[in-house]
Every structure is written in structure tokens, then in C-alpha cells.
Image (cartoon, rainbow, N blue to C red; front, side, top):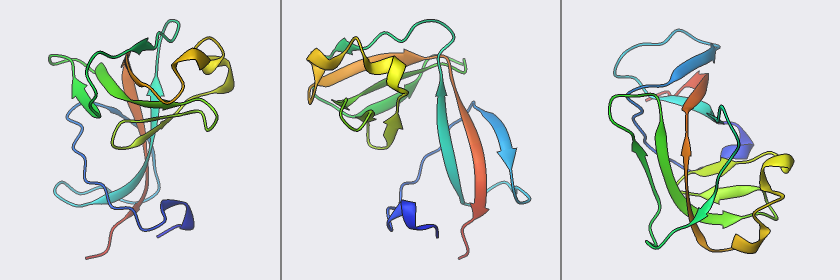
Length: 119
């Protein structure tokens, strides 16, 4: 397992997403190390959350997801149970929400399949 994963094990099922790239064959029911990327078609809109929870929820039967978690602008991340990494230009307007629970909608997740987990 690559060092950047630092032994963390997270099991997530995304019913709808785009597989952007894969470096190995993909089999239903198997587990893989993946790289997730959020896609937002318009401007990023991060809002303070009244609920202190970490979650990712699919919106209806779409590719869109609702994300809630703790915002860490110094590391450019939202901790929603998994770390959502944001680009520099995405966070400049939201520093006032540092270390607070926030929420946002994303239009989809792109997934790059890195390798199969050997069992």
C-alpha cells in the first residue's frame, strides 16, 4: 500500500461516480485503493453547518453528493470521514470557517482506481 495512505482503511460504496482512470482490471465485489476527486461545475459554495456531523450523502439518484465535515483551510481539506482536498483558488473566500463544521454540494466524484487490495 502506498505510504500516503498511512495504513488508513476506509470502506466506501459510491453508487454513482465516474471512473476516470484505472490501472488494473476491476471486478465487482473486490476492494481497491482509489483516489477521489470532487467535481463542481459552478462556483464552490461552502456554508457553515448547523449540524456537527461528518457525512457524504448521495442526492437522489444523481451523480451529486452532499458533504458535511470540518473545514481545515491551512491544509486545504474538509474532513468528512474521508479527506476532501480543495484547490487553493477554492478556499480563498472561506477562511472565516476555519475548523468549523461546514457543508457543500458537489456535482460528482471522479475516481481513479490505483490498485486492487490483496486479501
